[in-house]
Image (cartoon, rainbow, N blue to C red; front, side, top):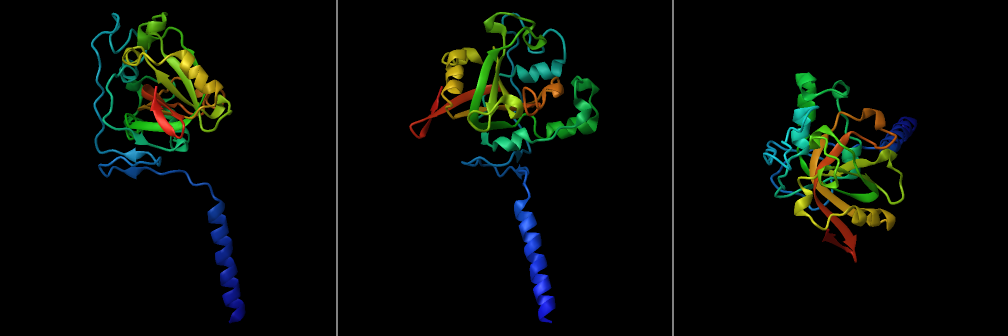
Length: 243
């Protein structure tokens, strides 16, 4: 009898130890109508804000001048959310996506894949971390192939920890249509955050960009992005300040 009790106790101890060592990926939480004050899992929202656009920006319509018009419209949204859900870095960087959407325009997606992406895309989120770098991008269909700084996206690489490279980063982007409302947003300011290893908090719209799966593990950790960025904050003196 004592041997049986001892054996059962040892089995429970082994199972408990194995469970404690297993990495747990954050799971979505339901929307309770309130925004939590600390970072957590991605929420599941019954309704998400409808993207707002400007009809034309320097002669460029929200659908751009080619490529995937649905993706371009999402990238070119200009609306600011009333609140952003603070989520853990891993909740975005480890979020899966259906392989069937890679390098495909939205009109080529299956209904099932579209529904999977729609569960998360368009959630207003905030993610904390550190910047690896920030660069102006070249011409693309989203911005009607404009080549001037005023018509170019900025690619910014957000890492979980200071000093990390971009292989496991989240790409977050500022866009030409949003930047005019934020004159203090400059590449120099972002570069200084990266140089000084200053903690930042990036708020904006969660978006899946299916165009770059080949870069995962090289120049990014996921094809989920915060795009466009709507708010940039930095930590200084133990408090958050808005750029």
